[in-house]
Length: 271
Image (cartoon, rainbow, N blue to C red):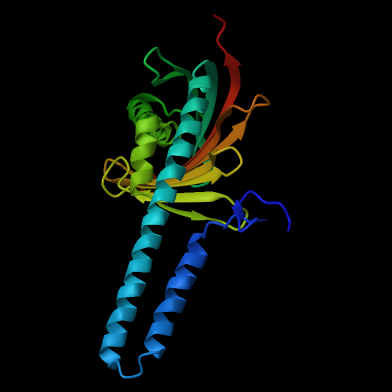
């Protein structure tokens, strides 16, 4: 007989018995169950149905537990990969160019400088801003200037909100995945969706590259005060493999505004 990793029995080498997998275990249980039922033709129908329902409930319960365990394992894997990537990203400085549009026309452009502080929090500093709106003279011009400043402030607050969804701590990611429903697309991309992530009524959808366990892009719906806001955050990677935000698009229907923001000029700190 062919030599295997089993043992000797009656002078012959025996093959090791394969361990049953979950699929075959379930199949065997169902087969034995119905074999038993058909051997007992006098059993009442209601008894048969009760036994069958009980078996199905037990199997469904086991499958649900397995799915939960897989989701938990997946969330830990992604959170760990994202946290490791974030630690590398903390050594970088970069700028963001943000363009605000109203009724399809460019109204304002701001440049913001970004970095991480000693505690690991993202710090933003507006370094320049300009508007395409021609200022009116006199009192009307002053009122116009105040209105423009208010709009610019609104834009910065909206962009600040997007930063919260873009850069999440490991703890925030674990909390997100504990609420999320996870699925897989045909191309293997993992998609997780959760509500009430930061504020009541918001929604975050993340798309994860299964090869790196890093984000491909995020979609969010949130509130700025009482105003609804939605946006898409896109990610790219340096040649080193470090992932970073490349662009953000936001819609603010209450203000009839749209923002296109591009991250650029990434550079590493010199110690």
